[in-house]
Image (cartoon, rainbow, N blue to C red; front, side):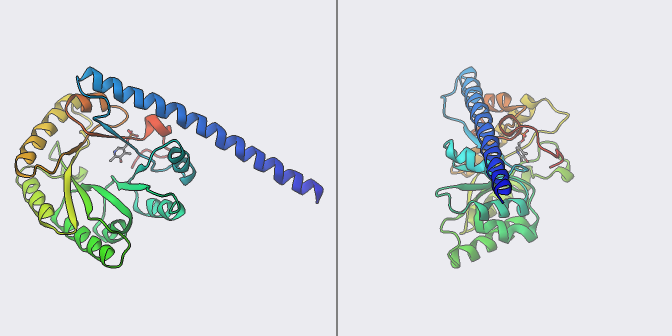
Length: 257
Ligand SMILES: *Cc1c(COP(=O)(O)O)cnc(C)c1O
């Protein structure tokens, strides 16, 4: 009896230590990352603070998100619907937390994501946009959300249809569709550069596509480009939002998603 409660107290203390260690780790990597982004802005002749950091927390537990929340972060990027939905439920007591869905999204998951996501970054087909519009309308009607869903269109920079993203005429048609949908708000563009292309060349191409889009949709001001390995190049080419996982959280247990 005494032994087992002592053991329980010991394991509580061990858990507190683990949490303190993780807090120190995340606090240090967050400071370093914010400095890195500021340095990238300075090197590009841009205002510090003109690039937003979206921490990407996929594969990491809700407890890590709570630590980052306590360090002042309010927005989190997730890319797997089931995992994200679980974390949203676990952390629903954290006020003003905002969830941004950055991964590939299947149409049959659109309805679920429309209930909790502030923004979806990866819209690349008219059918997905239509599903998100319907899902968001339902969520607005039943009170599970009270704002339109912000949408970024995912741009393909290599015309490989298996990697997702749209370009050219399909991109323009999709922008018109989203801008005209009452429950959606066209917020901008997102892209992931192809592995075999220089990030600078890819982000330069993306910036040109964004400039063209802004002529027809001036409200689509977000340009989400840049991750752990290439954020400096993205900032050089006008990114307004970098999505960073590894450089903040550490290596993911699985790297395929
Ligand atoms: C995982 C992921 C990121 C973060 O990538 P890191 O290289 O770990 O910084 C950014 N964007 C998307 C769409 C992702 O899925």
